[in-house]
Length: 231
Image 1 (tube, rainbow, N blue to C red):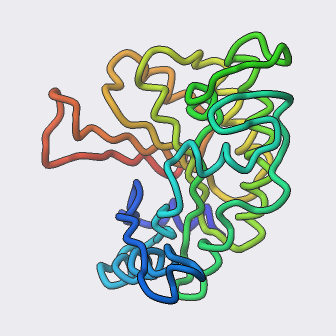
Image 2: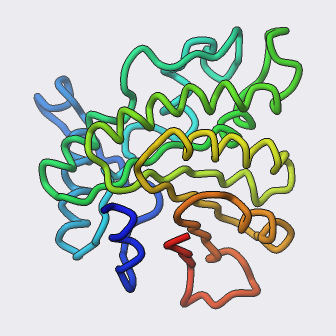
């Protein structure tokens, strides 16, 4: 049913990226200083008529939000074998969004982008390419928790793919490892200049490809993103 929604929808709108994280003051600053930012992000998307909303991604930067919760990682250093988090990382805010709107997407930072945001200080991994599969396994646990919460779509953010520094073959395996473990449709988001990698990205076995071109001089500033759905 979820896949049919994307296939039959002429143009399903969503929001890519994080919302401003404005912390609450007063008593809320002690209880949950960022919950009001989640409320604002969700409320604004609903008011704007967005078809598939998100929780706003206000808790942390896209690397630290996940790596700070994964055993085997301390701050920005990989110090041992990476394991899944002890509990859900983003599910709480996603569940709040689901209480306000029926169609919500979960968002995780991709394993290759996470790997390139970390320093390896353990002999467990010789390089970032060896680290990627364990990060994918850990993220799959989070993705399944989001799926169980009731998301309509899972978005995997892999901005590193546009830079030319990542091994796209290993990155593809990692993204597809997560996608294969879910029943929920999966979207992969990549931003930046894709001229040198677009042909490879089109081979990824995901349901939706979301490409951002706002900083690409060869594309119109009136078309900052292109989404290919129904794959």
